[in-house]
Image (cartoon, helix red, strand yellow):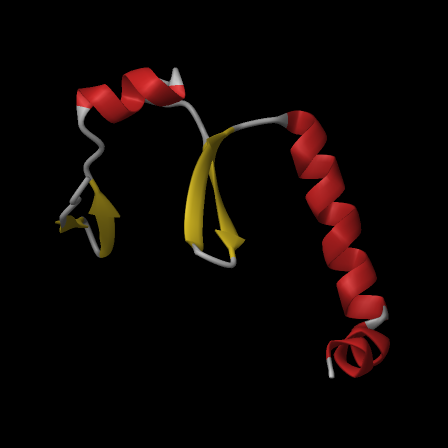
Length: 73
């Protein structure tokens, strides 16, 4: 599905068609996550458990940056 980036105040935004909102089971005012995956970005609904997991992952990545960089080589 092709989406267009538009101006929203001093920022940019994407208008989600009602079909996308229905598939995500969200409505105006709900929160979404944009997760970076190997194939691109994935939009997913807000999940408090995922928030906790992402905070832990980000902390580990900050603290073990050098080790993770070496493992990636």
